[in-house]
Amino acid sequence: MKILITDGLAKDAIAALREFAEVDEHFYEPDALGEALKGYDAVIIRSATQIRQAQIDIAKTGQLKLIVRAGVGIDNIDHAYAKDQGIHVRNTPSANANAMAELTLAQLFAVSRFIAAANVTMRKGEWNKKNYRGVELAGKTLGLIGFGHTARLLADKCAALGMDILYYDIVGADDQVPYTYADMADLIQKADFITLHTPASKDGKPLLDGSAIASMKDGVRLVNCARGGLIDEAALLEALTTGKVAAAGLDVFVGEPDVNLDLVNHPNVSVTPHLGAQTYEAQARVGKEVVDVVKEELC
Ligand code: MLT
Image (cartoon, rainbow, N blue to C red; front, side):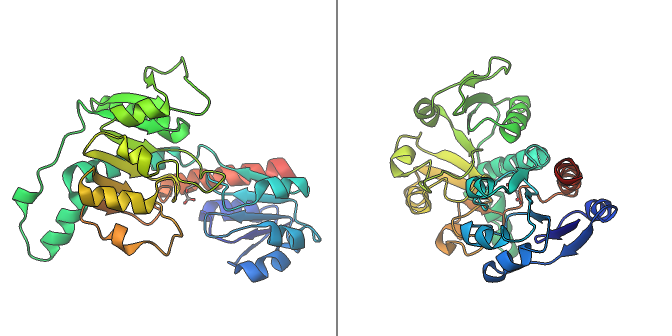
């Protein structure tokens, strides 16, 4: 069996794959990827590799049977098309959820206490204590949009910090959780902090556009560690400038890694370069789950 890893994988997982397969590690540009995939039974990718219809059309003439996304989001794969062509697409839905929840929590602290901006100005020799009076999380309402693995872990952590939890999910309320379900319009109006936990929208339109932002509380704080494009970046920048949105924590961006530098440099924005799953623990769990998926599918 031949396996290609294009965006890296935990060392232990690569060693485990090598016990039963020939494994190559190589990143291919989109133009060369389809042809390369013809020679492999499975390809394992993270977020940098895009497997679109063009690559699938070439790969399907070879031996490719399986695409594994080492992570949650499969928006970088034309997965419905791959399935139609008989190529299975699998992901690791919960393996990095705690890492994602912890980074979202870190961004919640960052947007409430000016941690990013204070770092930047202090390194320039400034002591801006008076400018950086923040707000506390305790006693505030957190609205989670999307209520999968990551959001549930985050809700528990934030409830422990004394936040009131509202959540919305496309599948509706879950009677098993001790939190309050709200429809999205209601959540948007009531929350002091809003975090996003959904996949990219299918039509590419932002979930939170200018009119959604307009209906939020004045001084709302937003965190997006889910997918770039879920918040309209131009509308967000405008709302940060007017103060409608007090601060935003962003780990994901439209067109990343080529990001909107006006947004990234806004003093009330805390940014990280798509680090949600970037912990040793999460990558070890993801790697283990990837190996299990490959064995289940191909052995
Ligand atoms: C994911 O979809 O799993 C996350 O975006 C993390 C990542 O791929 O780095």
